[in-house]
Amino acid sequence: MNKYLKSKTSLFLMELIITILLFAACGAVCVRLFVTSYVMTKDTVELNESVSIAQGFAEVMRGCDGDIDSVMAYYPDAIRGGEGFFEVFYDEDFEVCTFEDAAYVSDVTMTPNGAIQNMEVRIVRLRDYKDIYTLNATKYMNRTKG
Image (cartoon, rainbow, N blue to C red; front, top):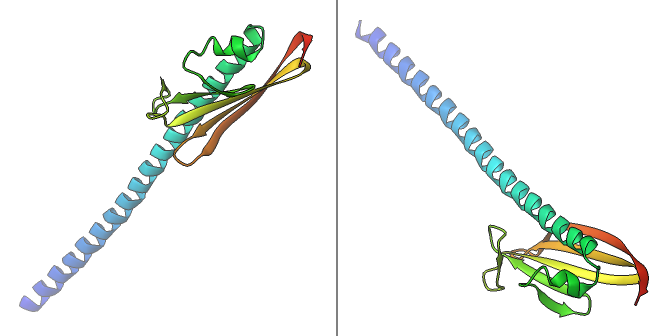
């Protein structure tokens, strides 16, 4: 009688081990899904904020007289880098900040082409210098610039 009791106990332990391994495998898959979901959400937030910032620059350029000085008047924290170029720095929450606290930068290049003003806006992640979003915009100036 003792012989049958041992075989039932070992069968129960094997079943218990298989169940634990199955739950561990399911847990590993679920953790991986949650991590992937978190990364995708962070990338989507970055892209949405970058698109919004770039569209803001384009709308300001189209709404004012289109030259770099009038655009920079709307961005008092902008740093002019040269002729037709300026930068605005953003922190992790896409709030305007200084270079020391920056996680992102928007590079805005404005080049006149006759009566057309061209603008290129690049939003770059500073951690790995990866372009998140680039927008090209134009405005007809109704006068030749040079």
